[in-house]
Image 1 (cartoon, rainbow, N blue to C red):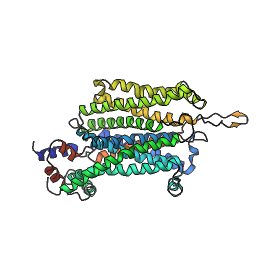
Image 2 (image 1 turned 45 degrees about the horizontal axis):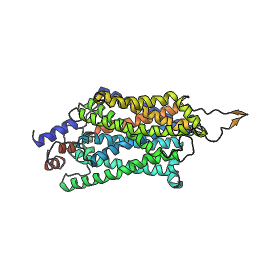
Image 3 (image 1 turned 90 degrees about the horizontal axis):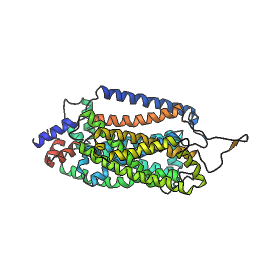
Image 4 (image 1 turned 90 degrees about the vertical axis):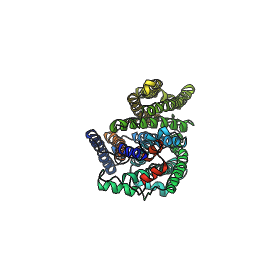
Length: 448
């Protein structure tokens, strides 16, 4: 097969495609969930946070759990892409853009859900006008914004040649879609100078995004660790959060890889070997997170400090015990055991394991946020001589907004996958041995 034919085949295989019946149904469900969440948010704007179950003691609820979850998933997307690019791991080319799209989609929703938690949206503006640099929330806003900007650039910069290739495919896309590709190619002409600038910039961004990605979850952990509460008063929280983010982010990449491969018949590109490598990576990340979990719970359990005792009792044998042990056993231990065997890293089983890890990771964030708030250091105020019990059961509107935000993140990913080539055409051509001249010609203003 000639080099031109290889590029032609890659473009045919990897170009964006229309949704089938199941795809349209999937989008419909996501839109309904997103609109339901938007409706609940409009009610919250009208009536305030009183529609939630938040109170003086449980002032952070599932909104913050969701925020931490989004940040966790987004962290490893660009981080995996950047590290694998820098290590010149060519096998990772089919998953790099998938990881970047996951990162962008989730960090967008992380920013939006924190505004939802603030109650009034103008309070986000006040962070810029009246924020104090001593406040960890200001640090978080700065690092989230920085991470989003770098992630967007790292996503769209390597896509310029692909946009130029697709906009020349007359008759295969609607005219508006071709114009969109032409616009987002930003005048790409495919000469050696442009490729050199792009490669150098991608390399620099890949280096830059690693400390920023680590910082975003470390700073998020400081929102908790700088608050004097049992369960949060830990110097372990930074690496603990980062390790957990690595695990759930890698699981998210695997889940999307499997869905894309199955939907678009991409077995030739997203191979079983890639799943095997990602499975091994996920085992390693899960073991690291298991280590930090042991550190996080064993040390306070051994010391049995008064402020920690009631919380640990609630987690180990109390009202949160089923959720706690479920996330530890089904969300971490069993996946580690299964993925340790080659048959446990086969695509379908690995996909199921990844979904379980993702679900367990969300409940893990719930356990980080909610139980601690049930056990303040200060005594609970009595009402008429009777101790007030701390209760928090998320309302319908809280669940609706939470589910809507999760659906919105999936919807953003789905739309991007629908209109963008989620495997880099020019990088795959390079991987398959196509010369630079042919790649430049395919993405330049010349006929293909």
